[in-house]
Length: 104
Length: 104
Length: 104
Length: 104
Image (cartoon, rainbow over all chains, first blue to last red; front, side, top):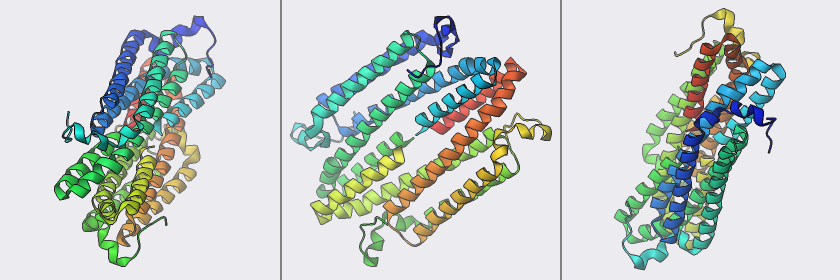
């Protein structure tokens, strides 16, 4: 874990927590979609139809990531800016790296 | 299903079938990764750590898609070219659409 | 050059040639868009407006790439399949690599 | 222009300005690369070689965008957070939209 967060008291700072149930529901749905792709392969379905499903999962995951990133900026990054220069710089570097990994 | 495939006799033409077990294992692993992300959200882990996992799943899915596409071209597309112009054109359009969906 | 093409006689096989003028016009337009971004930076325009333009160029380039890939498959790859197994395998590997580079 | 920036006095707030010359040089190089692709099409070079160049330009543009985004967050977004809630919310929405456009 590369977390720079400290402890439970600050959990409420994670931006996504207020939408935790919605994120969990989305992940459950994605898990079901992945299981569906597994089944399609098992049933020897047509390659292009499988690819369509893989693209759908990719889109769903990208939307989750964009949401998490948005929440992260509005909460953790903002808190860090208010905390001071050093904390802010660390968060900005972390966010930039996350975006770069994600935009590849 | 948008499949243009006909019937069971041709199943062996799906390029990925020869690697079916390997694809199934990869999907199982991806399903586990998605479940792991669900757990991270439940445990209120740090947003950036979750994003890192989402990127990992995206990469894994992209590799599955690239593999399926490669197998598809070497088998279904090739068969279609040997079958004649009309079959080939249909397959090329289908593949181009799949790549476009995927490269967005 | 990693070209596996042989000589001038086969130039007409490059799928994009029949649309050469259209591709050239698109590249000219993209060049103008890139010059526009340069100007925006020079005029110290707002970062987000510049990013919007960068995204537009990326989309335009992606569409060019998808078009070239499509043309390539319908011509070079198809010819290779008709030429025989070895030629076909080489082309399929080449296309898969191009898609992977592109989908990163 | 969707710019929410006001006037010249604040130009120094654009994060990228301190690297303006470096960004301009990168854009000049990208412009040259695009012109190179135009020439490759004119010279009827091999499709896959052209695609390789298109991928290279896409990478170069993506790196410019990631740099601009990073600079934007460290300056404009940070200033907005210090300015207050409303300004911050507007900037976060703007950045999230830019990332979404870019990650598509």
